[in-house]
Length: 222
Image 1 (tube, one colour):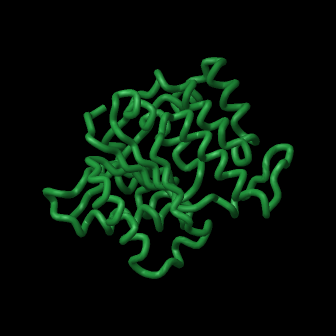
Image 2 (cartoon, helix red, strand yellow; image 1 turned 180 degrees about the horizontal axis):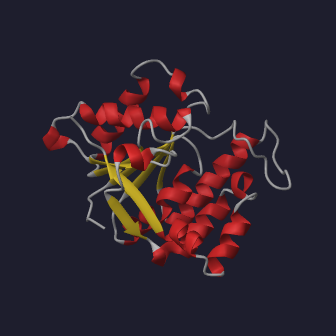
Image 3 (cartoon, one colour; image 1 turned 90 degrees about the vertical axis):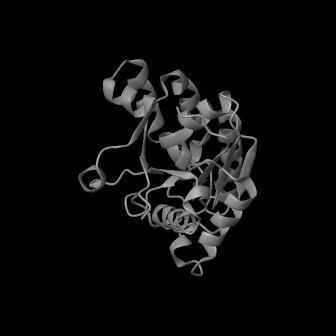
């Protein structure tokens, strides 16, 4: 991985980091790179309540806060920011508010790399709104001051429209830590994680690919 001075990760929900970037985050931290994770919401409108259910709609926000803190600890993140926005409402935020949040974080932290979603190719409205805020904020900066933007895309048509990933990080060395990060988000992932774990330990190539390769697109600013 390319050496960075500071990495800023911006996602809307607890667990957004787990599948796509937790190996990359762990690798940067182990290399001594400061990583800040700004999580916009607590995922309080998450579809799942555990399997078997152990959360209620009222208790889910607090449970997911603790899950996020546990996941951050597993990855080694010490600068976790919970930004206090409401789940499933980011696309309706006052125009410019999310963009200014990103600009404020960049001004404070001066990251060399920002990781978020690729707007338009991240499936969920909150994902796309977050990615758009990041892209819009960074586009305002002079090119000489603009951090690199590694965008995560996973919609059905993304490779057809934006091409193959520009960067693929082999995070095989962090597969177990990545599984531990996923386990931390038990309320949302208890349904699917056991089958992924079994497939990985059984040597199924699809599971190994899913856990061990993290793909990013370098966002094309005009």
